[in-house]
Length: 359
Ligand SMILES: NC(=O)C1=CN([C@@H]2O[C@H](COP(=O)(O)OP(=O)(O)OC[C@H]3O[C@@H](n4cnc5c(N)ncnc54)[C@H](OP(=O)(O)O)[C@@H]3O)[C@@H](O)[C@H]2O)C=CC1
Ligand SMILES: CC(C)(CO)C(=O)C(=O)O
Image 1 (tube, protein in one colour):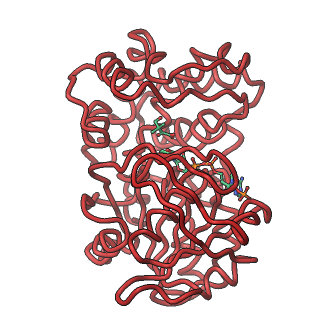
Image 2 (tube, helix red, strand yellow):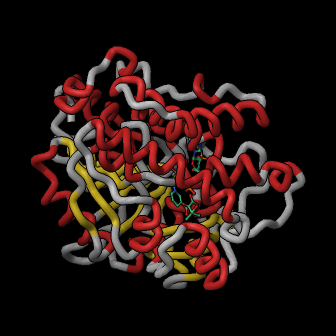
Protein backbone atom coordinates (compact mmCIF):
# COMPACT_ATOMS: atom_id res chain seq x y z
CA UNK A 1 0.00 0.00 0.00
CA UNK A 2 1.14 3.58 -0.66
CA UNK A 3 3.00 5.00 2.33
CA UNK A 4 0.71 7.30 4.34
CA UNK A 5 1.83 10.66 5.75
CA UNK A 6 4.24 10.44 8.69
CA UNK A 7 2.53 9.12 11.81
CA UNK A 8 -0.47 7.99 9.77
CA UNK A 9 -1.68 4.42 9.31
CA UNK A 10 -2.38 1.94 6.54
CA UNK A 11 -6.01 0.87 6.91
CA UNK A 12 -7.41 -2.21 5.17
CA UNK A 13 -11.18 -2.10 4.77
CA UNK A 14 -13.26 -5.22 4.20
CA UNK A 15 -16.41 -4.17 2.32
CA UNK A 16 -17.30 -1.76 -0.46
CA UNK A 17 -20.66 -0.53 0.76
CA UNK A 18 -21.70 2.80 2.22
CA UNK A 19 -19.68 2.62 5.42
CA UNK A 20 -16.60 1.16 3.75
CA UNK A 21 -16.51 3.93 1.12
CA UNK A 22 -17.37 6.68 3.60
CA UNK A 23 -14.64 5.47 5.97
CA UNK A 24 -12.09 5.22 3.16
CA UNK A 25 -12.81 8.83 2.12
CA UNK A 26 -12.64 10.05 5.72
CA UNK A 27 -9.38 8.24 6.41
CA UNK A 28 -7.73 9.45 3.21
CA UNK A 29 -8.64 13.03 4.10
CA UNK A 30 -7.00 12.54 7.48
CA UNK A 31 -3.76 11.47 5.74
CA UNK A 32 -4.09 7.71 6.27
CA UNK A 33 -3.74 5.19 3.44
CA UNK A 34 -6.86 3.16 2.62
CA UNK A 35 -7.18 -0.14 0.76
CA UNK A 36 -10.57 -1.71 0.03
CA UNK A 37 -11.40 -5.37 -0.44
CA UNK A 38 -14.69 -6.56 -1.91
CA UNK A 39 -15.61 -9.94 -0.38
CA UNK A 40 -17.71 -10.74 -3.49
CA UNK A 41 -14.84 -9.72 -5.77
CA UNK A 42 -16.46 -6.98 -7.88
CA UNK A 43 -17.46 -4.16 -5.52
CA UNK A 44 -14.17 -2.23 -5.70
CA UNK A 45 -13.17 -2.77 -9.36
CA UNK A 46 -14.16 0.75 -10.51
CA UNK A 47 -11.98 2.26 -7.80
CA UNK A 48 -8.85 0.77 -9.38
CA UNK A 49 -9.08 3.40 -12.12
CA UNK A 50 -11.39 6.11 -10.76
CA UNK A 51 -11.24 8.30 -7.65
CA UNK A 52 -13.64 7.87 -4.76
CA UNK A 53 -16.02 10.82 -4.44
CA UNK A 54 -17.65 11.65 -1.13
CA UNK A 55 -20.51 14.17 -0.88
CA UNK A 56 -22.22 15.56 2.21
CA UNK A 57 -20.10 15.88 5.33
CA UNK A 58 -16.49 16.67 4.32
CA UNK A 59 -16.85 16.38 0.52
CA UNK A 60 -13.73 15.10 -1.25
CA UNK A 61 -12.29 13.24 -4.22
CA UNK A 62 -9.52 10.83 -3.26
CA UNK A 63 -7.60 7.87 -4.64
CA UNK A 64 -7.88 4.58 -2.76
CA UNK A 65 -6.22 1.25 -3.32
CA UNK A 66 -7.91 -2.08 -4.00
CA UNK A 67 -6.86 -5.48 -2.68
CA UNK A 68 -7.32 -8.57 -4.82
CA UNK A 69 -7.93 -10.82 -1.84
CA UNK A 70 -7.99 -11.08 1.95
CA UNK A 71 -4.30 -12.02 2.08
CA UNK A 72 -3.22 -8.84 0.29
CA UNK A 73 -5.51 -6.73 2.46
CA UNK A 74 -4.05 -8.10 5.70
CA UNK A 75 -0.45 -8.00 4.49
CA UNK A 76 -0.68 -4.35 3.44
CA UNK A 77 -2.45 -3.02 6.54
CA UNK A 78 -1.53 -1.87 10.02
CA UNK A 79 -5.17 -1.98 11.06
CA UNK A 80 -8.28 -3.56 9.55
CA UNK A 81 -11.86 -2.31 9.46
CA UNK A 82 -14.73 -4.73 8.85
CA UNK A 83 -17.49 -2.53 7.40
CA UNK A 84 -20.25 -4.71 6.01
CA UNK A 85 -23.55 -6.16 7.19
CA UNK A 86 -23.21 -8.82 9.90
CA UNK A 87 -24.59 -11.44 7.49
CA UNK A 88 -21.11 -11.42 5.97
CA UNK A 89 -19.04 -11.25 9.15
CA UNK A 90 -18.48 -14.98 9.68
CA UNK A 91 -17.43 -15.55 6.07
CA UNK A 92 -15.22 -12.46 5.93
CA UNK A 93 -13.64 -13.15 9.33
CA UNK A 94 -12.89 -16.74 8.24
CA UNK A 95 -11.22 -15.33 5.12
CA UNK A 96 -9.10 -12.78 7.04
CA UNK A 97 -8.13 -15.01 9.95
CA UNK A 98 -5.28 -17.00 8.35
CA UNK A 99 -3.54 -13.74 7.33
CA UNK A 100 -3.87 -11.67 10.51
CA UNK A 101 -0.60 -10.86 12.27
CA UNK A 102 0.21 -10.69 15.97
CA UNK A 103 -0.35 -7.14 17.19
CA UNK A 104 -2.88 -6.18 14.48
CA UNK A 105 -6.16 -4.57 15.50
CA UNK A 106 -9.40 -5.34 13.69
CA UNK A 107 -12.21 -2.81 14.13
CA UNK A 108 -15.71 -4.19 13.56
CA UNK A 109 -18.32 -1.59 12.64
CA UNK A 110 -20.99 -2.09 13.23
CA UNK A 111 -20.80 -5.20 15.35
CA UNK A 112 -23.82 -7.28 16.32
CA UNK A 113 -24.52 -10.75 17.69
CA UNK A 114 -21.01 -10.92 19.19
CA UNK A 115 -19.36 -11.36 15.80
CA UNK A 116 -16.19 -9.87 17.31
CA UNK A 117 -16.09 -12.67 19.87
CA UNK A 118 -16.31 -15.17 17.01
CA UNK A 119 -13.22 -13.56 15.43
CA UNK A 120 -11.27 -13.19 18.66
CA UNK A 121 -11.86 -16.77 19.80
CA UNK A 122 -10.92 -17.98 16.29
CA UNK A 123 -7.69 -15.98 16.42
CA UNK A 124 -6.86 -17.32 19.87
CA UNK A 125 -7.42 -20.90 18.71
CA UNK A 126 -5.02 -20.16 15.83
CA UNK A 127 -2.43 -18.89 18.34
CA UNK A 128 -2.65 -15.25 17.19
CA UNK A 129 -2.60 -12.22 19.46
CA UNK A 130 -4.92 -9.75 17.78
CA UNK A 131 -7.14 -7.07 19.28
CA UNK A 132 -10.73 -6.88 18.12
CA UNK A 133 -12.35 -3.50 18.72
CA UNK A 134 -16.12 -3.18 18.36
CA UNK A 135 -18.49 -0.31 17.72
CA UNK A 136 -22.18 -1.03 18.28
CA UNK A 137 -22.72 1.53 15.54
CA UNK A 138 -20.69 3.42 12.94
CA UNK A 139 -18.64 6.61 13.15
CA UNK A 140 -20.27 7.89 9.94
CA UNK A 141 -23.70 7.36 8.50
CA UNK A 142 -23.77 7.10 4.73
CA UNK A 143 -25.44 5.80 1.59
CA UNK A 144 -23.54 4.41 -1.41
CA UNK A 145 -24.65 6.21 -4.56
CA UNK A 146 -22.54 4.34 -7.15
CA UNK A 147 -19.43 2.16 -7.31
CA UNK A 148 -17.30 5.28 -6.76
CA UNK A 149 -19.65 7.69 -4.98
CA UNK A 150 -20.87 7.88 -1.43
CA UNK A 151 -23.01 10.41 0.43
CA UNK A 152 -21.90 10.89 4.04
CA UNK A 153 -24.84 12.04 6.13
CA UNK A 154 -23.31 12.34 9.62
CA UNK A 155 -20.14 12.08 11.67
CA UNK A 156 -21.55 10.87 14.98
CA UNK A 157 -20.59 13.01 17.96
CA UNK A 158 -19.86 10.05 20.26
CA UNK A 159 -19.18 6.37 19.59
CA UNK A 160 -18.82 3.59 22.19
CA UNK A 161 -15.95 1.12 21.80
CA UNK A 162 -15.11 -2.19 23.46
CA UNK A 163 -12.06 -4.39 23.04
CA UNK A 164 -11.15 -8.05 23.10
CA UNK A 165 -9.08 -8.61 25.12
CA UNK A 166 -10.56 -6.03 27.47
CA UNK A 167 -7.10 -4.99 28.63
CA UNK A 168 -6.57 -3.34 25.22
CA UNK A 169 -9.41 -0.84 25.58
CA UNK A 170 -7.20 2.22 26.09
CA UNK A 171 -5.04 1.50 23.07
CA UNK A 172 -8.16 0.70 21.01
CA UNK A 173 -9.65 4.09 21.84
CA UNK A 174 -6.36 5.80 21.04
CA UNK A 175 -6.24 4.05 17.68
CA UNK A 176 -9.85 4.97 16.83
CA UNK A 177 -9.15 8.60 17.71
CA UNK A 178 -6.00 8.61 15.57
CA UNK A 179 -8.05 7.33 12.64
CA UNK A 180 -11.34 9.16 12.94
CA UNK A 181 -10.87 11.97 15.49
CA UNK A 182 -12.34 12.36 18.98
CA UNK A 183 -15.58 11.28 20.60
CA UNK A 184 -14.82 7.64 21.43
CA UNK A 185 -15.70 6.30 24.87
CA UNK A 186 -15.19 2.90 26.49
CA UNK A 187 -17.99 0.36 26.78
CA UNK A 188 -17.61 -2.25 29.46
CA UNK A 189 -17.42 -5.28 27.20
CA UNK A 190 -18.24 -6.60 23.74
CA UNK A 191 -21.74 -7.64 24.80
CA UNK A 192 -22.41 -4.04 25.82
CA UNK A 193 -21.36 -2.95 22.31
CA UNK A 194 -23.61 -5.58 20.72
CA UNK A 195 -26.60 -4.50 22.79
CA UNK A 196 -25.84 -0.80 22.34
CA UNK A 197 -26.60 -1.34 18.64
CA UNK A 198 -30.18 -0.02 18.46
CA UNK A 199 -30.62 -0.43 14.70
CA UNK A 200 -32.60 -3.67 15.14
CA UNK A 201 -35.06 -2.14 17.60
CA UNK A 202 -35.51 0.87 15.33
CA UNK A 203 -35.37 -0.81 11.92
CA UNK A 204 -37.60 -3.81 12.74
CA UNK A 205 -40.80 -1.84 13.45
CA UNK A 206 -39.92 0.74 10.76
CA UNK A 207 -39.67 -1.98 8.11
CA UNK A 208 -42.58 -4.12 9.29
CA UNK A 209 -45.06 -1.25 9.64
CA UNK A 210 -43.94 0.36 6.37
CA UNK A 211 -43.74 -2.92 4.46
CA UNK A 212 -46.17 -1.95 1.67
CA UNK A 213 -44.06 1.15 0.98
CA UNK A 214 -40.99 -1.08 0.69
CA UNK A 215 -42.77 -3.54 -1.60
CA UNK A 216 -43.96 -0.68 -3.82
CA UNK A 217 -40.46 0.92 -3.70
CA UNK A 218 -41.98 4.21 -2.58
CA UNK A 219 -39.89 7.17 -1.51
CA UNK A 220 -40.61 7.25 2.24
CA UNK A 221 -38.56 9.46 4.53
CA UNK A 222 -37.59 7.14 7.36
CA UNK A 223 -38.08 9.49 10.30
CA UNK A 224 -41.37 10.89 8.95
CA UNK A 225 -42.63 7.31 8.98
CA UNK A 226 -41.44 6.72 12.53
CA UNK A 227 -44.95 7.78 13.57
CA UNK A 228 -46.18 7.75 17.18
CA UNK A 229 -47.42 4.15 16.86
CA UNK A 230 -44.17 2.95 15.30
CA UNK A 231 -42.23 4.84 17.99
CA UNK A 232 -44.34 3.06 20.66
CA UNK A 233 -43.37 -0.32 19.20
CA UNK A 234 -39.69 0.70 19.06
CA UNK A 235 -39.85 1.78 22.72
CA UNK A 236 -41.25 -1.64 23.71
CA UNK A 237 -38.37 -3.39 21.93
CA UNK A 238 -35.95 -0.99 23.53
CA UNK A 239 -37.19 -1.81 27.04
CA UNK A 240 -36.60 -5.51 26.32
CA UNK A 241 -33.09 -4.82 24.95
CA UNK A 242 -32.21 -2.98 28.15
CA UNK A 243 -33.80 -5.61 30.40
CA UNK A 244 -31.72 -8.30 28.73
CA UNK A 245 -28.58 -6.17 29.09
CA UNK A 246 -29.41 -5.63 32.76
CA UNK A 247 -29.62 -9.39 33.31
CA UNK A 248 -25.99 -9.53 32.13
CA UNK A 249 -25.04 -6.71 34.49
CA UNK A 250 -24.88 -4.10 31.71
CA UNK A 251 -26.63 -0.77 32.22
CA UNK A 252 -27.59 0.77 28.87
CA UNK A 253 -29.26 4.10 28.25
CA UNK A 254 -32.51 4.24 26.28
CA UNK A 255 -32.72 4.63 22.52
CA UNK A 256 -33.55 8.32 22.97
CA UNK A 257 -30.06 8.77 24.44
CA UNK A 258 -28.53 7.07 21.39
CA UNK A 259 -30.22 9.58 19.07
CA UNK A 260 -29.12 12.53 21.22
CA UNK A 261 -25.55 11.23 21.33
CA UNK A 262 -25.37 10.39 17.63
CA UNK A 263 -27.26 13.27 16.09
CA UNK A 264 -27.54 15.92 18.81
CA UNK A 265 -31.35 15.69 19.02
CA UNK A 266 -32.97 17.67 21.83
CA UNK A 267 -36.49 16.19 22.12
CA UNK A 268 -37.25 13.80 24.97
CA UNK A 269 -39.81 11.43 23.43
CA UNK A 270 -38.96 9.17 20.53
CA UNK A 271 -41.89 10.33 18.38
CA UNK A 272 -40.67 13.93 18.84
CA UNK A 273 -37.07 12.93 18.10
CA UNK A 274 -38.29 11.40 14.84
CA UNK A 275 -40.16 14.60 13.96
CA UNK A 276 -37.08 16.66 14.87
CA UNK A 277 -34.79 14.54 12.68
CA UNK A 278 -37.24 14.68 9.79
CA UNK A 279 -37.54 18.46 10.07
CA UNK A 280 -33.76 18.91 10.24
CA UNK A 281 -32.77 16.42 7.56
CA UNK A 282 -35.77 15.20 5.58
CA UNK A 283 -34.06 11.80 5.34
CA UNK A 284 -32.62 9.30 4.98
CA UNK A 285 -35.11 7.58 2.71
CA UNK A 286 -36.40 4.29 4.08
CA UNK A 287 -35.43 1.08 2.28
CA UNK A 288 -37.06 0.29 -1.05
CA UNK A 289 -36.02 -3.34 -1.49
CA UNK A 290 -37.59 -6.32 0.25
CA UNK A 291 -34.10 -7.75 0.84
CA UNK A 292 -33.26 -4.68 2.95
CA UNK A 293 -30.66 -5.16 5.67
CA UNK A 294 -33.24 -3.63 8.03
CA UNK A 295 -34.68 -7.17 8.02
CA UNK A 296 -32.00 -9.48 6.59
CA UNK A 297 -29.35 -8.21 9.05
CA UNK A 298 -31.29 -6.68 11.93
CA UNK A 299 -33.76 -9.55 12.49
CA UNK A 300 -31.31 -12.49 12.78
CA UNK A 301 -28.31 -10.68 14.24
CA UNK A 302 -30.21 -8.09 16.27
CA UNK A 303 -33.62 -9.15 17.49
CA UNK A 304 -33.16 -12.95 17.32
CA UNK A 305 -29.89 -12.41 19.21
CA UNK A 306 -31.74 -10.49 21.94
CA UNK A 307 -34.22 -13.38 22.11
CA UNK A 308 -31.34 -15.86 22.45
CA UNK A 309 -29.81 -13.82 25.28
CA UNK A 310 -33.24 -13.50 26.91
CA UNK A 311 -33.53 -17.29 26.85
CA UNK A 312 -30.12 -17.62 28.55
CA UNK A 313 -30.94 -15.05 31.24
CA UNK A 314 -34.63 -15.91 31.76
CA UNK A 315 -35.86 -12.50 30.50
CA UNK A 316 -39.12 -12.50 28.53
CA UNK A 317 -38.99 -10.67 25.17
CA UNK A 318 -42.58 -10.76 23.81
CA UNK A 319 -42.45 -7.51 21.79
CA UNK A 320 -39.17 -8.58 20.18
CA UNK A 321 -40.73 -11.96 19.33
CA UNK A 322 -43.74 -10.21 17.76
CA UNK A 323 -41.58 -8.16 15.39
CA UNK A 324 -39.38 -11.11 14.37
CA UNK A 325 -42.55 -13.15 13.73
CA UNK A 326 -44.14 -10.32 11.74
CA UNK A 327 -40.96 -9.72 9.72
CA UNK A 328 -40.69 -13.45 8.97
CA UNK A 329 -44.36 -13.56 8.00
CA UNK A 330 -44.32 -10.65 5.53
CA UNK A 331 -41.03 -11.67 3.94
CA UNK A 332 -41.53 -15.44 3.97
CA UNK A 333 -38.09 -15.91 5.57
CA UNK A 334 -37.61 -17.56 8.96
CA UNK A 335 -35.13 -15.01 10.31
CA UNK A 336 -34.39 -17.04 13.45
CA UNK A 337 -32.72 -19.61 11.21
CA UNK A 338 -30.51 -17.03 9.47
CA UNK A 339 -28.01 -16.19 12.21
CA UNK A 340 -24.83 -18.17 11.43
CA UNK A 341 -23.03 -17.00 14.60
CA UNK A 342 -25.27 -18.39 17.36
CA UNK A 343 -24.19 -22.00 16.80
CA UNK A 344 -20.39 -21.48 16.60
CA UNK A 345 -20.62 -19.18 19.62
CA UNK A 346 -22.45 -22.00 21.47
CA UNK A 347 -25.04 -19.57 22.76
CA UNK A 348 -27.65 -22.34 22.94
CA UNK A 349 -25.84 -23.94 25.87
CA UNK A 350 -24.34 -20.82 27.45
CA UNK A 351 -25.06 -19.31 30.88
CA UNK A 352 -24.91 -15.67 31.99
CA UNK A 353 -21.71 -16.22 33.99
CA UNK A 354 -20.21 -18.41 31.28
CA UNK A 355 -20.76 -15.85 28.54
CA UNK A 356 -19.46 -12.94 30.64
CA UNK A 357 -16.31 -14.92 31.42
CA UNK A 358 -15.56 -15.15 27.68
CA UNK A 359 -15.60 -11.37 27.30
N1 LIG B 1 -24.96 3.00 6.27
C1 LIG B 1 -25.16 3.55 7.48
O1 LIG B 1 -25.37 4.77 7.64
C2 LIG B 1 -25.09 2.70 8.69
C3 LIG B 1 -24.68 1.39 8.63
N2 LIG B 1 -24.62 0.64 9.77
C4 LIG B 1 -24.10 -0.72 9.73
O2 LIG B 1 -22.80 -0.74 9.14
C5 LIG B 1 -22.58 -1.96 8.43
C6 LIG B 1 -22.24 -1.64 6.97
O3 LIG B 1 -23.35 -0.95 6.43
P1 LIG B 1 -23.39 -0.42 4.95
O4 LIG B 1 -22.04 -0.11 4.49
O5 LIG B 1 -24.44 0.63 4.89
O6 LIG B 1 -23.94 -1.70 4.19
P2 LIG B 1 -23.98 -1.97 2.63
O7 LIG B 1 -25.20 -2.79 2.33
O8 LIG B 1 -23.79 -0.72 1.86
O9 LIG B 1 -22.71 -2.95 2.44
C7 LIG B 1 -22.46 -3.59 1.27
C8 LIG B 1 -21.11 -4.23 1.37
O10 LIG B 1 -21.19 -5.33 2.23
C9 LIG B 1 -20.71 -6.47 1.59
N3 LIG B 1 -21.61 -7.60 1.94
C10 LIG B 1 -22.94 -7.55 2.08
N4 LIG B 1 -23.40 -8.77 2.42
C11 LIG B 1 -22.33 -9.57 2.49
C12 LIG B 1 -22.16 -10.95 2.76
N5 LIG B 1 -23.18 -11.75 3.05
N6 LIG B 1 -20.90 -11.45 2.75
C13 LIG B 1 -19.84 -10.66 2.49
N7 LIG B 1 -19.95 -9.36 2.19
C14 LIG B 1 -21.18 -8.83 2.20
C15 LIG B 1 -20.78 -6.18 0.10
O11 LIG B 1 -19.81 -6.97 -0.48
P3 LIG B 1 -19.24 -6.89 -1.98
O12 LIG B 1 -18.15 -5.87 -1.96
O13 LIG B 1 -18.72 -8.24 -2.18
O14 LIG B 1 -20.41 -6.50 -2.85
C16 LIG B 1 -20.52 -4.70 0.12
O15 LIG B 1 -19.12 -4.52 0.23
C17 LIG B 1 -23.89 -2.75 8.59
O16 LIG B 1 -23.75 -3.60 9.68
C18 LIG B 1 -24.94 -1.67 8.90
O17 LIG B 1 -26.04 -2.14 9.65
C19 LIG B 1 -24.98 1.16 10.99
C20 LIG B 1 -25.41 2.44 11.10
C21 LIG B 1 -25.45 3.33 9.97
C1 LIG C 1 -29.95 5.46 8.74
C2 LIG C 1 -29.43 5.12 10.08
C3 LIG C 1 -28.44 6.16 10.51
C4 LIG C 1 -30.59 5.09 11.04
O1 LIG C 1 -31.48 4.09 10.76
C5 LIG C 1 -28.76 3.80 10.19
O2 LIG C 1 -28.43 3.47 11.28
C6 LIG C 1 -28.53 2.88 9.11
O3 LIG C 1 -28.49 3.23 7.95
O4 LIG C 1 -28.33 1.71 9.42
